[in-house]
Length: 139
Image (tube, rainbow, N blue to C red; front, top):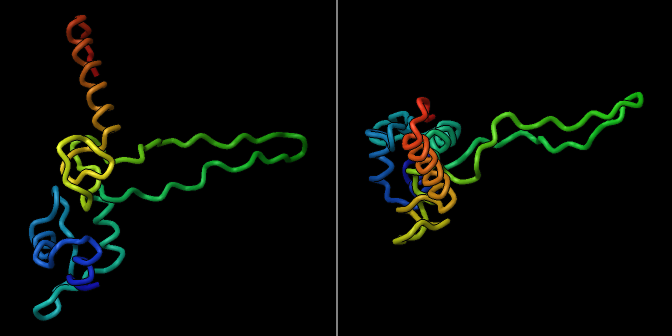
């Protein structure tokens, strides 16, 4: 992919993609190979960079499989080990290419997702209550 293609994909200017290559986004640099005066970005590197920045999540394997019957035994579907929410974690914007809002919103580019904000506030409240009750280990 070229810088122009990635810029169109991200809906930002080409200079911003060059900044992602040089300086990164939230500590994640976009891997690119210099070809003359331009850059080439591998599709796999681009996808891995999006996951590393928190824009995308890794696809979860199919966990909801039908129970199989083998010699009279019923095998229940296995429980997923790592349940990740469908929204980015608290400090990250809900949708980097979304709309500009003044409150948490599902499509906000400057505020977190409302559910991420709710989870963060609940955890902060739980820790404050534990601290006020004098519990030693508040985590």
